[in-house]
Image 1 (cartoon, one colour):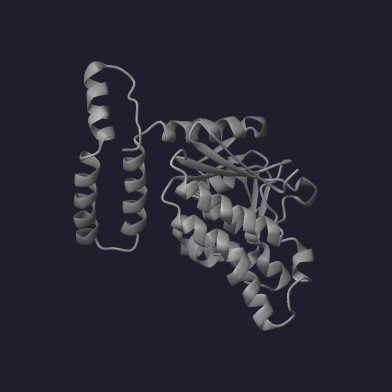
Image 2 (spheres, one colour):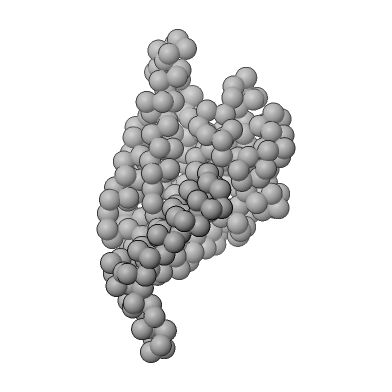
Length: 260
């Protein structure tokens, strides 16, 4: 059985971390497979939404400590571990034009929490716990935490979490806006699939344009954002799916979208 399971069904691609005996701590091989799955999902026309989750009651406890013994024990070796391996997932996630959802059961610690932060939306099980645990071992967030976390929960809250390495349970994560919903553990998979399926049922081009405009809007002023969306609006309006949406509404039936 693979440490990374990847499948596509009904327009939803699912990436499942599958090392439950290690709380899904990742190896270099897992990182490569995870990044490759994201790249495949981006290029696969049948994929409209991507979901990442973990098996065995955990999301991801970060890098497997055995990996640290595989790298050159120098500053360059430590840097290369991140830039040539771990960051491949971050780069692939950033390049993903399709919605990226995370279902977080159990622990998301250290780089595992950073990996969850890469998703557009996170849902948590009641047992979920988040921790920027790097400081506890004398390290700094190595996989995007310093960039991503302040944008999600605000600078002061992010600094507190990163400076203390404190653990946040599911209710507090919801209050912080770290997750969008909390569900009984046994219902988490169904909840993330329901959300993914609902998004996948929308016109794909419009969905991707919304994501692109939102992400780019975080970096632009309002005037630039409005100019950009006017172009996106014109492109989306010209698609077959846009016409189909309006026809289906007028005819009071469910639309059939093709991504064109």
